[in-house]
Image (cartoon, rainbow, N blue to C red; front, top):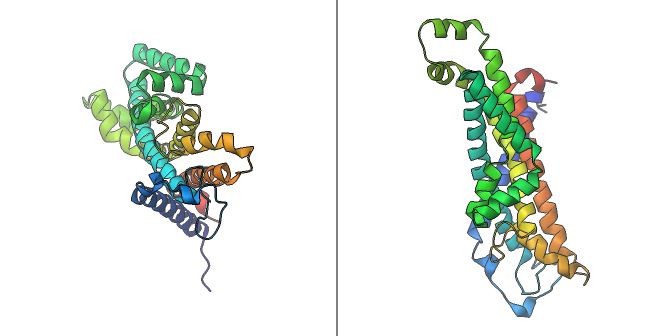
Length: 274
């Protein structure tokens, strides 16, 4: 019987995590209309074979609603994390290559953003941008770039001392040419891992502010909306309304974290060996 080595197991784990997340995203979009369908003849049913996650007070299938909510959260997380990671890459490179004055300004902005309570800043930005899908994406994008920007800035400062970077400067290449041709390829592994590890934070914070009423609108079958609405029914014994959506949200976040850690190991082959 064939045994997988550490690198192969890591690649398999990464593939399974990504496949599961893609499946949730596609199924959620496929059943988007069904998630809104109401049928009062089947309301308040506990989990059973016909309705795996039960039904709510309006007879909506909680399994379908949960998949649709997670699909929306994943799409928001992908978009927000992508914008945030690109912002971190740009500001990290600018800070380390454009002189002390620019570096001081970018560092001050990073310290300012990190000094404000995270969820408070996210709520303020989302509310100022009109809440909803657009407000949440902008809010998450503008509050999750700081740690990755600091990491990239540190990497660029080290790269500036490399011999081939100094030679490129003496040959007359501009800072932007040096950054794009010689630094970005070196920074890509850190950027990619940082991008994936931003996803779980983006998803959790989207669900958090939606739960508090500052994110997606109540009409949308978002996980935050589902959990918020279920709170008033828990005292009535309808535990399934919050349990299963909450567990799947945690599973989704864990899978993104697993995918990020697995990718980090694959990009550093030595750490993936047994």
